[in-house]
Image (tube, rainbow, N blue to C red; front, side):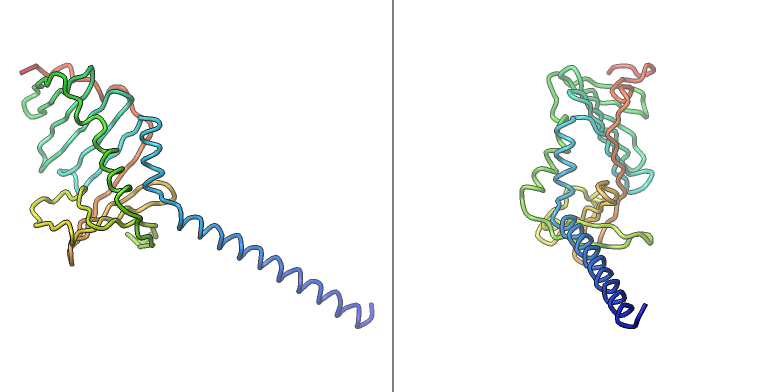
Amino acid sequence: MDKKQKIFIISVCVIVAIIIVGLIVYVVTKNEEENVSENRLSNMYEKMIQDETYSITIQLDDNNKYTVSRKGKVANIDTYNDGNHTANIIKDGNTYLLMYNTKRYYTYQNNVTGLGELPSQLNEIIQSQEPEKGKEKIDGKNYRYEEYKGVSDFLMNTDENVSEEDTNTRFYFDGDDLKYIRTIMGDKSELIRVDVSYVVNDSAFEIPSDFQEG
């Protein structure tokens, strides 16, 4: 193989390598742009209302958390407020308030107010504005976030004096999964953990057998 042939082959290899690198950069950039333009909170909301089956736990700490579980026309809003455990089970067109400290429940006839409360909250937030998007590291891991201005719906520490105008909320996603919610109030913030599942056990909607009415 003479010198000209070697130069030609090397040139072809370089050109092919440049084309391959260019294609890789294009694909990666395109995927990044698609990820940025995608509204993950909106996608989550759409899945919730389409399937009507979900369980979402929002937790500040072990003593302050709540889980909203729904399966069609039944729901359970299970709450720990400073360790005080209560639940609202919504089924048969009624709401049953469970008090775990006394093992009693109370029936509120013809009341299904809480059935779609969480999806309604999310829809109101989504419809209000286009979110600001970015990335942030939490506990050493990068998450994509969507930030909504003037939102404080998920603030759990109600001792804070909150001005809606100065309060923003960030929803952090790992892929399509919501993992954290941060409420930002001026120079303060509150970070809560989130666990989302689309599989719900029917036992979540049953009143425990050892509870008495009234």
